[in-house]
Every structure is written in C-alpha cells, then in structure tokens.
Length: 149
Length: 99
Image 1 (cartoon, rainbow over the protein chains, first blue to last red):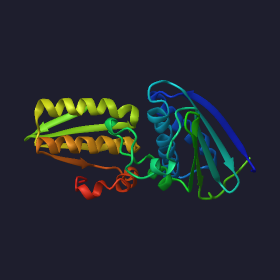
Image 2 (tube, rainbow over the protein chains, first blue to last red):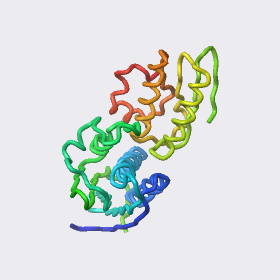
Image 3 (cartoon, rainbow over the protein chains, first blue to last red):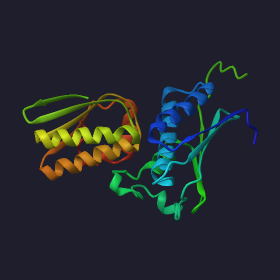
Image 4 (cartoon, rainbow over the protein chains, first blue to last red):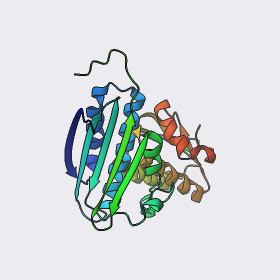
C-alpha cells in the first residue's frame, strides 16, 4: 500500500470522546480538500464506528479505541477503527440494517448501514473476546489546483 | 434547550451535534417535558443542528413511540440539507413525520 500520510491516535471508549474522534479524522482528511458533503460523510461514518465501540465493544467498562487514518493515492482516505472489546459473534447479522444488540438504549441499528452508504467500502474483522477492526475507505473527488506536498 | 408550548403543541429547538453522547440528555429533557405538559403534538426543530448520526434517528424513533403511546403525534421540522440523507436512509419518510 502506498501511504502518502497517516496518523494514529488512541482514546478511551467514553461517549464524550465521540465528537473528538470524528473531528480529528475529519481534520486529518481535510488535507485532501474535501467538499463539505464529503467531510460530513467521513465525520458521520467515523461517528457510527466509534459509537459501536463505546456501546457494544465495551458495554460495561471503559477500554481503548485506536484510530488509524491513511491518505492514499487518488484522493483516497482509509480509516481503521480498532477496539479490544468483546468482539462480534455474527458479523453478517450485526451489519443487517435495523438489527441492534442494544435495543434498550434506543439504538436505531443503522450504524453499519450509514457507514456503507457514506463510504465506498466497509470491511469488518472481529474475534469474540479479542476485539474488532472496522475499515472505512472513501475516495474523494479531485479538486482543481490541489497542491499535494 | 429552547422550547415553546402553544395550543397543546410543544416545540423543542435542538441544536449542535446530536450523537450518542448528547442524545441521552436530549431524550431525558424531551421525555420530562412531554410527561409534564402532555402535548398533543411534539415538534422537533432541527434548524440549528449541525451534525447528526444514527443516534439522532434513534432519538426521533423513541420520541415517536412515546407520542404514539400518549395518542399524540411527532413532527420533525426545519431539517437542514446536510441531514436529509441520513433521515432518508433511516426510512423516517415512511412514518410521515418529516415536515
């Protein structure tokens, strides 16, 4: 993989960090001069993934969430959200729209559906008891006079 | 949160970011006000909402269910263009609550 730039940061799985996480990823992706809509899509998709970690990966404790953001050729952003939480037993079921593992918390069960709609590709790797990695990929539209340095 | 009660219609003016973190407090405030004022219609005004993820959809759905229990209605108003896509994705249009 030809990685032009990347950052990795880690934070605790507290809901108060959800805004920070999506803001930090959006800020890093800004170097590609995305449109307002593209930035909003990235922000929303990351928010969904991070919320899944807070709500489902560490339901009764506070754990670590790590995010790696990569700038790839052809205006592509790749975001990897990793936790070492409880893991997903049935990934296919978890990704079904409207399915939620936490119905008592007023969860809409749309996290993965939003990620898939707002990104070009979403992949999920998970092992029960070990953790989960969600990878988002989005190609941004080329911008005129985009001086990549 | 700015609110307005007029003719048994309660309007809540939401603002800022609506995510998993902020949804809880909004939910508690909204349910408290609905319980106290027993409006016929609950209106959620989104004019000043700059960001929303699917936690906001859950918030809307929860208030819809609450109002249904009371025999009332829910309306979602002044939705910024930036939030239309996630609302459409959620199928909220089918509930006929978005004004």
